[in-house]
Length: 412
Image (cartoon, rainbow, N blue to C red; front, top):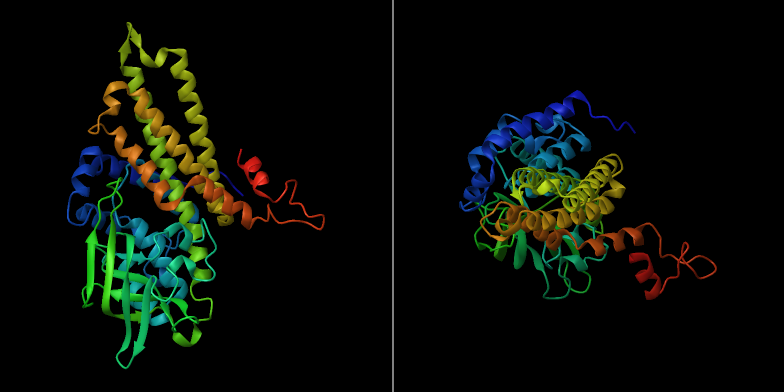
């Protein structure tokens, strides 16, 4: 593993940082999230057409740049620094890899070049209210429980003479109110032998599709409730190749790479919040001297710097080894939460006002942990996957017991 960034990766970082510093300051972020789309459509077109951001990791065969996970992490770190409101997460991180992994050649050819060009946005609609469980970050994707479960739970799919029809609803669909294409997880095959499959719903053609944008703590993420009322859909992939496990394996694989992208965003946001706080305490004076000159403040900022840098190291290790994505995400979300909370306090009285930019970062920290965490569940699931709690022949785990007391001891 070579930890040094290449010239191309440094150029991606420099170009994005300069553009976003010019076009995506705190004032522009607040203006963008209040539009109908929830983001600046003009800036998104510029990022797509000039920088190829949504197609960064797609292969050149489908109009992408063919870059790797490290380049993607670099880009996501910069979008996180600016708290960029955009369809990047829903479209390029979640939906596009699923289409590439599960879709037929005809579906990939029809959809991925449009996504890479920024002409089409997409969203993953998962019933059950837990996107992190669906991506295998906080739970096991096998069995389909993440998709609602039960006779009437989740979204139901029925195949008729005119194709597939969907019934049900999904809440907290990122960018679900504005995406041109929805990837919907639905139960097919009847109860109790149902299996969970992914379906394509084209928003501009689908009758019976009702989408409602929801209010969220973090305005830079735009969730929506999606209702499907006898809505026409197309199966993602070929029916004769869909196995009994459904898309569980593909979702888990996408979850690992998505964890790296989310962790990179969190690290970028934490680093930006820390930089802004350092600049503030250098300029703010109290008792005739800069606040940043007090030893207690220096110690707090030094601790935050170490925490952010450790999280950044975890992110780029996970970009090299996606199996570590869940742990990297946990560390990055924790670093973001602690850093933004300290940023609010170190800004003093002005930091506690809702209008101050520190709250944009604080809300991103809280919102991301609600959507993709919490941190302790990310770590617990990573430990389960690693076999940490698997008993050996003597009835004990790897250095620990397997009961509740052992879990508490490990968490502490």
